[in-house]
Length: 186
Image (tube, rainbow, N blue to C red; front, top):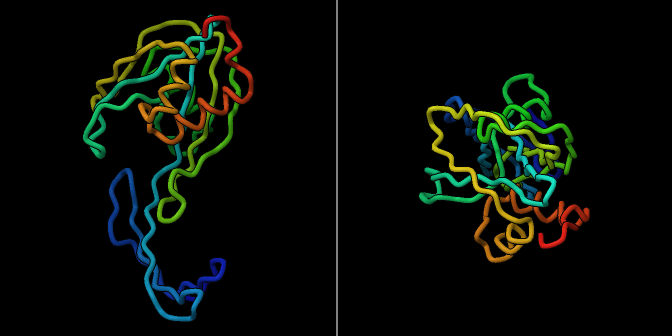
């Protein structure tokens, strides 16, 4: 097997670890400098991140303990895309599951690659508006507290590194750039 990946040549590839959430692959390669080497790649299913905004310019975020970073984080409503599910369907499902919110208006904010050197896990970002409240359906692994804050406060939290989740930060700043935060007092 010889496969070109940019200036790299892959001579062999094997999965060294896999569970329902991630797969770790090790590739034997010929590096750009023509020397042999290895390259590790982590594959995680793609996901979505949603920023719900109400008519007054407030947004809803989650506060939850995250095992990997060992702390409670503030972030957008986020989750994985299941199987052949569309990214918009996943966004609607995650919004309902985590917060009980349902949105009539959806704006696609683009895609972000969280860490391009070793991780394949594209994340699609959305702004959700025209909200209706309902009952959440959190999974057994989730203990999510939903908070409602002004959009301006969310921007400050990103700038002060109080919101560190990549897709959440990018989505908030994209919404600001799109001029979605022009509510008085927001």
